[in-house]
Image (tube, rainbow, N blue to C red):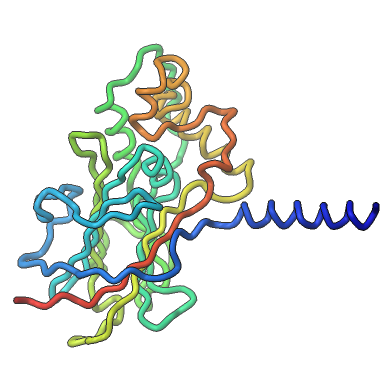
Length: 274
């Protein structure tokens, strides 16, 4: 009986540990075709330079995306395809990396990162307009995180940095978050005339850390937007309004359901001018 009890305990513990690990949606890189940018893409959170649409889609992350390059930069555009993916993007951002030499820590850019410095406490009795909630979100985006670059110390850099790394975010007319990122090819160590494909990773980081930390971050969202991001308004005004901005769970919501990160890999040759 003791042996059975012990085995059951070990099995249960294993299940808990496995379920707490990040969820990687696909390990094999999907081969895609990078677009050639006839002119430098304006990084402004708009899709004007992408023919107003993104043609690639990853089902596990619910992200629409496109990849492009010119002789100077690699460009990535992303649009969330579901309210849940928006919630997780705003929690800890999206990490985009280019791995040339199978490094443990490839050059990586994480964006958007919301400033969580406590502001003036909001005691709102009326529902903020969607545009107001969007404005509050965007004004909290103040930096880009970089890791693994030879020329840059790991950590946060300004949106207006001197390294040539650019990122911007904006909401479209359907309340989807559009993100654009540009990374200079030279910073990635890509040699001119490279003929081998590059493996890229796109990861939604989601809510991370112990349950208590995840719950703290959820509560911070709730307070940051006067409850308008989803938690309180789901109960006060119905789920549709909160769902528009990601359906942020209430304070009693089990965080494990949206805590894990989700990652997928793509492989592409640099596009050449036609």
